[in-house]
Image (tube, rainbow, N blue to C red; front, top):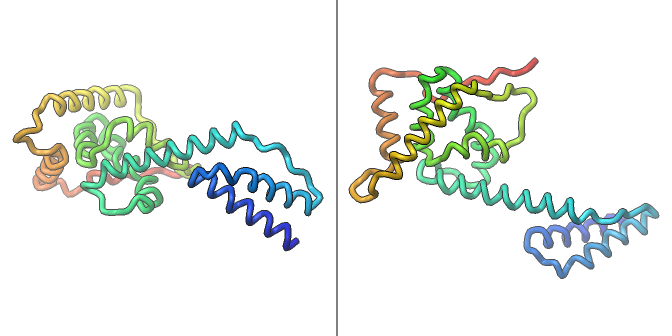
Length: 204
């Protein structure tokens, strides 16, 4: 059993080097250690499912790149590392940003647009990319917006994007500074409610 455990351990080391550092010259050793473990256990070693492995490896790398891009965009307003962002921030970010829409409906569209500007995010980040990068908790009710509300939000966001693209960078404040000032102005007018707080009901 010691020899089997050692073979499995060696195979895992080779496999990690192949995946992380692209050291494909170690592939024969990886296969040899896998076969050795199976031989010593007198078990069966199936054929490697290379197409499935390559597909999962490609998805993993694509998601890592996407996390890096989102984290980089949020750096001006975020002070945590990428690992902390992935584990502690990303799973709740969609719920936080959609808080105004969930609570106020069409009245919360402007506030959500300002929040996306503040964090330097896009509509695709909010509705597509976050879902790709987070595991769905079966105990939480999935946030689904009515079609009319989703359409109104898309129109408002597209209008804001055209406005930003039409502005000249010279002599203009960054969109992050503008969004922050707009939010601070609203809060100073007496709105003490947390603008991004949202409660997600749990399914019993």
